[in-house]
Image (cartoon, rainbow, N blue to C red; front, side, top):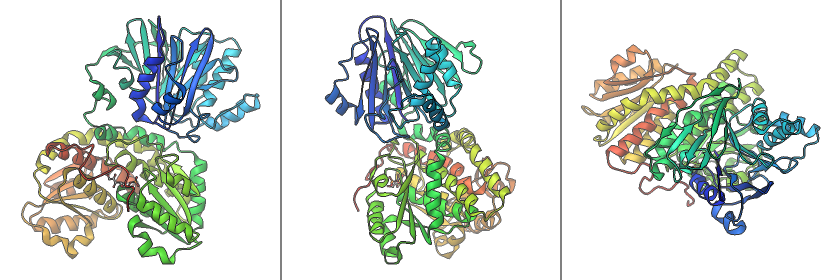
Length: 606
Ligand code: F6R
């Protein structure tokens, strides 16, 4: 998730406006940044790796004359954070510049075609193909707007782009598919940006572009057309009364809520992860005699989900282990035949890294899934996959958890194909369901938000609660408990539902709240037995189950029905109401969900 911005002004320079918009967008990514302006018919560029302030102190980003420019702050997805990979990217003639937020699916084939036509690529980014394509259309006499239109029609994937061309220094051309883009209208000046935070300092009159829109923006006009038809469309001008703080949070009161609602898009990005990285990890996983999934906290809960997926779909036994216990438990038995898949959002969790250091010393193969390019995990691992979830600012992991589950599902799918132990039908069915997950999560957010907000008023008064699930839903129960407990500070218990009768059930008394994760899968009939056991002892039953499951609904004191999905993908959908419950219960109890006490985003101590 990168941030893009652009500005065109009638008189004066835009460098200071672009610099301040970059600072506002920094929360979207901060491994490199750059600015490009047009001055006296020349394109000027300053860009580098590092945080914006560091780059500014080295290059002085304010010292860029010109009344038109674009800027970018990067969260690397293709290509390491470096000067050459930083945006803006230029064409071969150095007269066109582009900034991009998103991931292109077909960049490799486009790049090969462009290289065959003698274009020189400087970076390892997917973005650079865009500017070379535009260059080709300009070369054959098209105007910038037309060149961008033709180019976007060739792109597959997500993008928000802003383009300037020294030959037409009176306009910025922008286009979007899935990645957000907004135009800001001010006096004698117009702006474009990934989000309102970048422009609210200058105007509150904005136009939100829709998927498939493209716009040509001058200092006092803008025209929007549809990319597929080229036909002009009207979009309404919205007057916002947002503060700068609200704008940074996309209008949500907290980053956590924004990140919860970002999930459909984050999951779409996860589906675009490049196959070659997934294939590499699959190769290693398939070769291991012993395979371990290690992580801490929420990432560990994702490992449990992964172990069910690998086992059921690919018939691969992979053992989830809490990182801080790994060396004690398995340290003496691991060796050259061991493969360790480490999950860490930050890539910096000390418990994980210490286990990996030890395992490396014993010649085990280490592979990883992380959200942070350049993190220690990416340096230790033989191969890794980046989640592409963008920075997560709320301390509690939400969007990075569901995106970890998507990556694990993609790996399970590939492993299943490679190992060939389940039928093609099962594989195809899983693949189809996987593609529909972003949409199901969108629907789940819609269904859950209001009922959960209401429920949180009741939950805020609980002094303790239980979370139970069977099979893969046990992992959902663990993650639901972790989220609710760490944000509301209500001591809570999570157990495999079948195990609860072996001890924890003694806690139950009249009215004690027990939450069941109850999708309509192969565990349901046993789970109903567990619900009855709890009911018989006076527990108050809260069930999140499948839409239309009347039997479970009848047994419940409170029921929320969610869309049906493949049982192995149900955690991605079923965790959503619990993330919301954690958030709203924290608010009800008067806490700050973005910064729960005693916790840090990245735990770098043992
Ligand atoms: C809980 C949470 C933590 C992290 C854990 C591991 O909401 O965020 O439990 O999951 O500290 O962090 P990473 O994934 O960065 O290794």
